[in-house]
Every structure is written in C-alpha cells, then in structure tokens.
Image 1 (cartoon, rainbow, N blue to C red):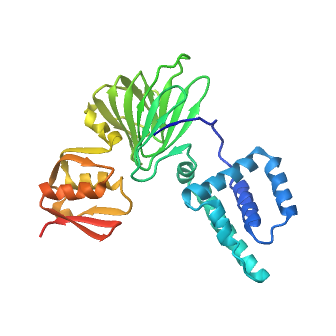
Image 2 (tube, rainbow, N blue to C red; image 1 turned 60 degrees about the vertical axis):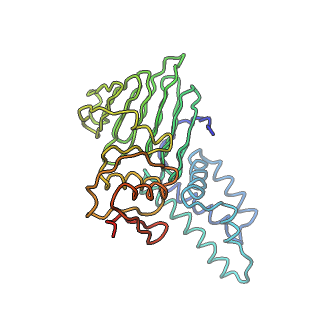
Image 3 (cartoon, rainbow, N blue to C red; image 1 turned 30 degrees about the horizontal axis):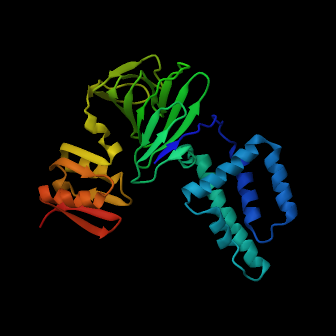
Length: 327
C-alpha cells in the first residue's frame, strides 16, 4: 500500500529547558493527583509560546514512536488503583522519569530525536512506499526515516536514517529536487536513484538520469553521477564513480542479490532486515555468496544459504544467530 506524504515546514531546534518543562507537565498530568487547575495551567503554558506546544507534541511523539508504548496504555499502567498518597507520588515520579528520559535523550542525541519524530519511518524488516505531493515516488528500506520539506523554491527530502529509492516526478514550478544527508546533498536531474546513510559516509546509486553530489563542507565541489554509476561521499569529498547495476535496488522488491559477495558482508546486509544480532564466524567470513535471497523472510534466506555453502545457522535464540562452519 502506498502512502501519500504531506510535508511539514522545517522547525528550529528546541531549548532543552523547554523540553524539560514539557516533560514535567506530562508527568504531572499522568499522576493520580492531577487537578482541573493543573490541566488549565498546562493548557495556558502550551498556549504561551509556539515552542511550548512543539515540545509537548514532540515528547508525545517520542513516547509513542521511540518507546513503543501507547499513551493510553502507559497512562493506565501508571494509574492502577492503589491506596496512599505515597504510592501516587511514586507513580508520578515514575512517569516523570520515563518522559524526562526521552527529553534528555532528545537534548543530547539530535540524530535519535530526529529519527524518532521523522515524518515517515519504516521498522526493521519493513519496506515502505510513499507518494510525495508532486508525484515523486519514494521507497523506504528497512529501519529508515525521512522528513519532507517542500517550499516555493525547492523540494527537499531529509534522510535521517537508512536508505531510500527515489523516482522523481516532473515539477511544473521547476523546483529542484534534493535529498540531503548528514554528509551533503544530492540534486536530481530527472532521475531514479538510491541514497543510503552509512553513518561515516553516504552512498548514491543512479539507475536513470543523473544527479549532482555536493558535500556539506565543500559545496562548490559538485560531482555528477550518470545512470549506471554510484559513489560514496563524506562531508568533504566524493569518491570516484564506480559502475552499479539495477540489482543495487533489488531491496525495494524485497530481494538481496549477491554475486560473489563475501559471507561476512552478506550477513551484515541481511542483519539490517531482521531484529537482534546476526554474526558471522571469522572462519567462514571469506566464503563467497551468489544467489537471490528474500529480505522479507530472512530465516528462509539463511536456510537457503546453507544449501550452497558449507555453513550452519546456529540459533542461540530467535534474536541471536551465528553463521559458522558446518560440522
């Protein structure tokens, strides 16, 4: 199923003190001794400045998305009937601790906050298709997150984590289409291409058309990639283009295509699509893998791997798996 993206305007970073205030208000209203006056005071605080409301909504989103616990369920858990004001104070402190943890994490880890509150995200193992307002198609790979920022002068997608495949649409307003990562920007020249954030670098593969890459610390150093080319880039340099094939986008169809791939690299790629830990014993790391494997059923992919290689799949638990030499 395809989602239709609705971009939201860019928002400046919030003052950590405002985040802490929002956390305190949420904890207060979670407690059993919250009064109508508390709720009225909180409403006035939220209305007192746009940053207050932004912090309030951001922490609720952080709670929902990062902690994975619905607000109603959390609120119910904190409000289980019990006697004594001491118990109520303890529950209120617990609520404050949970939300304040989110606020502190947001203040200290901007990347984590941005991923948790991104416009569009995919869970581990999921592949998600989006349709942007201009008709551009975006596919999110596993554990990926983007923000969409369209204005009168540009169409911008901010890649917060993971990987995306983009098929740009013609824009009657002739606004440039850009994908931006922590390392720089990629401007589409009527194209179909993928962008991946690998933490230390970003990588781009072009399947149709062309793109221009501009590192964030060297914006005047633009490098053009044409169809069939790919490259990595950091904040200050772009590597020489190298050939890429259409198989580099096979993940968008739920497939991993390996052609002489090292087993260690295969395991690292497959691990992105499954929860927990998938490790490769160094003794078999240099074995070569070829074939087409399912990213939607990684357990089946692992079993298929054993049919062509002398390896065993050892499950310590469902979430701790090791590839080692077969007995």
